[in-house]
Image (cartoon, rainbow, N blue to C red):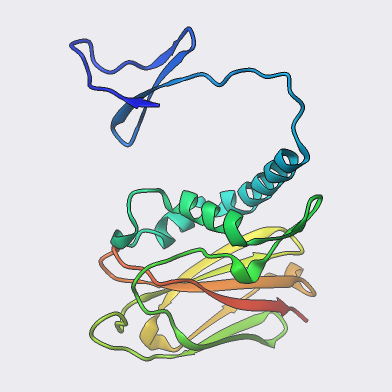
Amino acid sequence: MAKFLKGIVGAYSGKVGSIVGSSWRSVDYVRSLPKITGKKATDGQIAQRAKFALAVAFLSPIKDLLNLGYSDKSLGKATGYNKALQALLNSGISGTYPALAIDYAKVVISKGGLSNLMGVSWYENAPGELELTWTPDTNKFNAFDDDSVVLLMYNRTKNFFSILESATRVDAMLSLSLPLSYAGDTLEGWIFTGHRDGVKTSLSYYLGELVLA
């Protein structure tokens, strides 16, 4: 792939023969089309494709959240979704093809220099009533009273994500009511914090598995 400068007629876009012109983040590129091959995929290639497909299927519904979670200005220009996908492919999928599975404890939905919450726990204090508590520790460097707390819940039973951002670090707790249809379902959860100016986030924290009554 080659980067090129615009001529008097502007940037080139589209396909001509075996060359494709495109643009990404205001930078123009040309690349050649992939060569068509009649070779059969190896077992390793098939396994890697299955791993990639599993990771994409899991993360795609929360792409916008991942772009927020990896928005810390210290992390570079790649999209949050791409960073999360790479992290998941590197260490977040367990098993051997075809028995692949997401290792929820190793899923990273955010990363950055802000401090995450301390002493976090979550539990169902009554049927359908969920509560998270944490220690509201703050400092003047990377843990501020008004840091937002972002909760991501994944209902494994229903294959459904929920996102909640309604508390701050100093609140020390977050309560929510779950749909009646969630009774008996299994949840996975993650939290992270975000700074008011939108340029700092924390490393996400895995809350663990929660089986509802």
